[in-house]
Image (cartoon, rainbow, N blue to C red):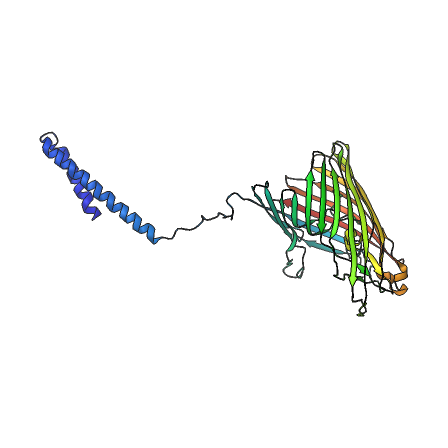
Length: 426
């Protein structure tokens, strides 16, 4: 049909050109016929396109596009690739509670993994309360698969929180954590790093920030056999107040912790049930900061002390207290500190020398003397590294670490570690 119309159209044009000069009346008739044919052709083509469009289901979104619930939300995706290569002698861990007390005849062990790699998702959405920000971040430090075949590592939640109008709600770093950490690959032996569910309110000023934080409680208590118990009988959240200061010479923070340690009919390590209940108020302070000293160099420090600090220091190496034969809770005093000097050899090359120590005073009246080897008393560490940034957003380096651990019975264990790593942030 369309072909016939087009043929007629071109024939009319031809005749129009031939007779244009001879008969103006016939020319006008031909022009009218041409216009009519053009209208028919256009109408037919439009109907054809409309029919084809109805037969095709258009996709809701384009390929390679991500549709967000709120059109005003900005989504960012990032993370890091982190490769560790660690040689330790003897075989063991650098955490205060896990430094080996005996070498068992082993000279050392080499291990490599990428489980400290991370992936995060951030959003930012405007609102009447100001920007709403969210963060979800995971790493792969969960349960590990076999090194023999797949080297799989389960994802583990690090952060999941919402920020708006000064509030932080969700899981993230505790307000009691140190403001400034040592620039080392392995953590300071006294590190105060707790990540948990919380509700925090922050007030920001020009030079100061103030936080009040209500956080997830967890009591840890030693029984008479030296076993750490977690009764799961908490009745009040941990309360943390913190002030942060950002002067021209560096930064500093002071945090205060208040908590209620409790149990109710707890099951002991020998499977007996203590038909009793008790509670005690614990507290702690943490001071940390950084001083700028020469060009890019700085000194970093941290110190904490408290009664019933427990899990807030040294990755839960020490209990908040112990339970005596009558079922009463006795809280233990704990202190720790670290200091480090960071020197920049150039814009891309730097080193840190760090020292740290942590110690608790266990209530020996509540412990059987035969089990004192199971109770941690103190630990210290030394770290020295050389870090290099070969390209933007990357970091590689080598670090030597030495850690010592002493238990209540008097035995001392030592571990030396040499760590090579590469990290790229994307």
